[in-house]
Amino acid sequence: MTFESLPSDFFHLEASLSPVELDKLMELRTYLETEIKPVINDHWDRAEFPKALVKGLADTKLIGMAWPETEPFPTTAVFRGWVALELARIDASVATYVGVQNGLAMGSLGVCGSDEQRTYWLPKMHTGEIVGSFGLTEPLSGSDSAQGLRTTATRDGDEWILNGSKRWIGNATWSDICVVWAKDTADGQVKGFIVPTNTPGYVATKIERKQSLRIVQNADITLTDVRVPEANRLQKANSFADTATVLRLTRAEVAWAAVGIAVGAYEAALAYAKERIQFGKPIASHQMVQDLLVKSLGNITSSLSLVLETSRMQDAGKMKDEHAALAKAVATARMRESVAWCREILGGNGIVLDYDVARFFADAEAIYSYEGTREMNTLIVGRAITGHAAFV
Image (cartoon, rainbow, N blue to C red; front, side, top):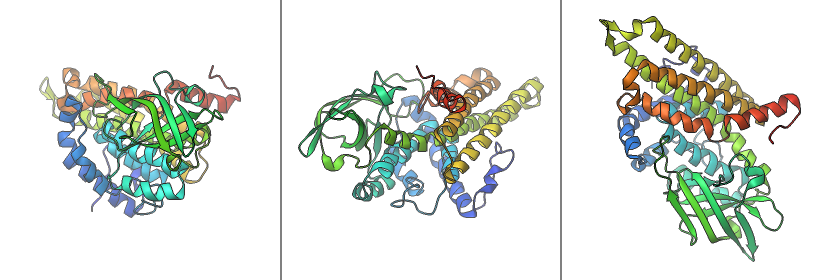
């Protein structure tokens, strides 16, 4: 398959990928542009996830790449980053679905699951037979999850009883399992549990009236005396430090997705500027429009360089929390800036779905906040460079 660099990849950074990786990325790009892009605005407008496309996404073999039980070929964090960018440049909600399934849900099992749990669950999630969600955030606990988690887990013989609530849980209205994080009432430590969503006492209610990531089926979850067997407790999750390991692995990919959103908005704005005629010529020939395009491209290029180096450090085993945090904080801030400039280029057409930019503009707000707000990531980096924690 012939590979063509994106117009937003101004320095051809994709060229560092191997020929096999380039072929797989082009295969994904073709699928996304032919199968998902034509229908995605309608799904966004109706706030419905295109479930019929889950099998097609799974057939790309790019779900579950990081784990020996599922990876179709040896992959790197750099390649997984490019995949996240590619998904997000078409639609942030689809990228979020994959991020939850591949990174958070499967990541929890990959990092904290026993050999038996990994062998049973990961292949089924790889094929899309099992859809997962990740239950950490709570109505009263988001950024302070490490200390403020209120959902409890109480041991009762060979079972655990879970009580509490979760909020903003992606995929949760239709997932088959949810990885629920709860505080053990015996030792006060956070532990993870694989909870089938048909378990009595588990209720997921869709969060309505969202104006960002409308396609993602976020839910409020209530857990009322939910009984989970010890066999479903993640055997290697013994404290929030283990939860943080999962989040660390996915935070860099969220930064890549932020770049992808900026890329999607930029490409749509660039195409529009070349076609839109005002005062007898394309608006792309106007100095002020070119200024907005160049500033957007500059943000994309600098952010892409940052996330690329972050993932290279991850592949080398040198990435720390502060590296992923800086990448996420900076990439999402530059994304937010860029999608606003792209919306400006389209004028009034920038607020209707027909031209795609409005969707990227709205979805950027959620990406800016989730998996660590800019403020929290700033404090993680601030602690690393000063030696002083300033979280409270």
